[in-house]
Image 1 (cartoon, one colour):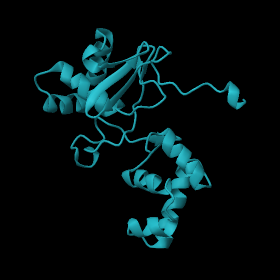
Image 2 (cartoon, rainbow, N blue to C red):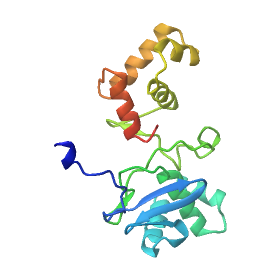
Image 3 (cartoon, rainbow, N blue to C red):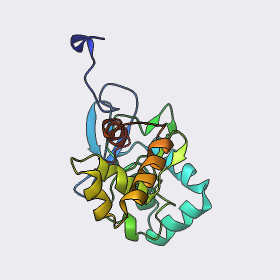
Length: 190
């Protein structure tokens, strides 16, 4: 495919039938039918399907009830934010079906008591990525040297190298930082 034939990256919902949920400056939004709107304008059908998805997972339902005991809309809104808050090029909702979820760098992730219940760890090649994997992926996607990264993570260089090799294997036996950076970007980690 030549550069002239490439399609521009458009978010789901701009020209496709999918819906993309995301958060911007603490405000929850969605893209559908070529428009960006606040989640307060979600179609009733999407809200109903979200409520059904929540009810299928008792741990998710319990967490949302604890956060928002008096508002079913706030529970749905919180669920969409935690599960699908990352803006990416893959539809979160399409053909009346919610997808698995997005990773986004939520500032509350490290201290949230519902981490891993409402939100999901990113997966690649069927492998869930740990918080340490994610941190290493972010650091390796910079111009920092391996020695500097090992020092920042308080790891001996040999231990760092073994951990990096295990991460590269988990990501499909990649070989370079450039390959890792592309994967990291595709997972919405950077």
